[in-house]
Length: 125
Length: 515
Image (cartoon, rainbow over all chains, first blue to last red; front, side, top):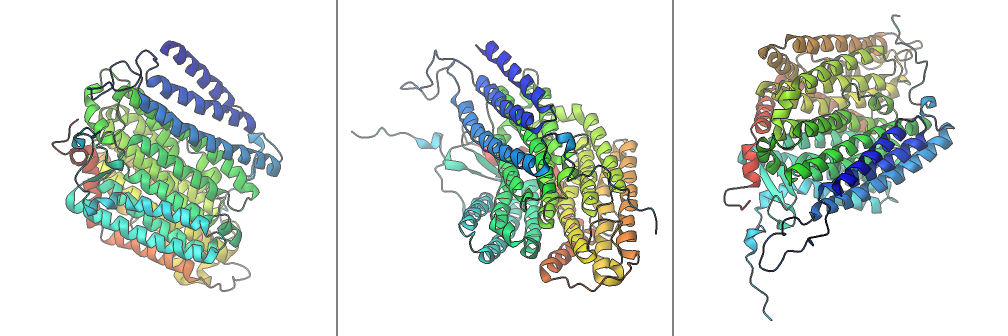
């Protein structure tokens, strides 16, 4: 099961990196969405994937029986999902605004903050 | 049915928390609750501003009290929900954390006062002051936390507040800059999260003291080198080290000056703080292995920053490169890893928080007085007001690392530490970087101040909202330069705490706590 997930996480990461390397902002956003999910799956896998032993502390014991899935990574993912979701929402709005204001979704043509033909500083007066 | 009697002392803190320990959490509590309060007062922008300033003053006092407590009594720990560490999320404060938090509060107060006149009405209505408080919550939380996942959460808090601050005004260049800033910084924090996930898989704990204790024993079995590399890349991106620095000059000059000043003072230093905390304290063996790489990255960052500053015409973009050059110096300190080198890096970080905030405020004033940020158009500022020119010259010289200002001492420490380990090329790079920066800053003074303007600039009054923070920060810069001894001691003890975290670990796990 872990091996399968490892491959899946790898595929997610490759897709995300491929999309982020694009110069079109909407593809970058799709890449970031996939990247967030790749990380979530990675942490999920790190917490052991098993249904055999329920994560319930039996009567008379202090700790989980060995081999149970660790619930903490799932709590971490929950935090990460909320955060990455809100970031994605912000970024999508920002991308849309950038498209409206700058008239392009091609990042190589976004030169408002850094104009292409900036003059060199003066050499004397 | 009577409830079974259980002994909670095995899992929970049963003793009442000493009052002084509340200081570890109060700065963050203050920032978050004020952020929420200010959000509700958005229809009263004037009241909002004054509450924010009062809150920042209180934050400064709290951080100062915290520093005094930590220096006097050693690191202190407070756990959330009274769960014993490593199960409860711990806030652990040592000298390094407290120093950085205090410096951040100074910078935030200066930028907050400047913003009283700089933030426009609409900017305030869209939440400048609430976002400022939330940014401070994120920055302070990142400095004070003792839990690595919690550190990630604070990174995200400060990141989302910085997005909000960056686009206040919704100008075209702001949206352009914010897009690049947002995407690259989000990728950096995602890398950090990946590393945290793998770290939990190998260590089974997220508490930094616990990790520091176990790291040596796991070096054979866990992928610690992979972890160290991931952390290094993530934090180098946050700190704007070459070659992952390109988001900084693309975005830092676009927002309002108060926001630029805040970002330049705080955000990159949070990256450096996390880098030192994780690589030096948690993974020291791996840092040793990577030290050559960090040194090369640091040296290149010093030079790229200085060369970038030489090639810029826009005053604010030029300062962005000065920030980057400073980051290189801190990385050199992290690469050396000796007590002297780490002390230099800590000292440089403190100096940089204060100085970069002051320099951006200065650029804002210069731009307002001269009517432009371009070196090609500015001129006549010296003739216009000699006092302002004097303050400018002192701050610019401090940025180059010349005595008797605050930039001098950390560079002395770093150069000495480099020569001590025989890394003459690192010492040479730091000095060369300082030399190039001196040319760049000298040129700013030459063109913007000495060059006569035609027609001569009309006299402009500087209000107290700009004059007070500038004067206070300049006095601080001169004061550190003239009387560095105490801060030097503090930086040294912060560095010692990083290199030998036994006091840090002891504060989280005092004897008698079951593990």
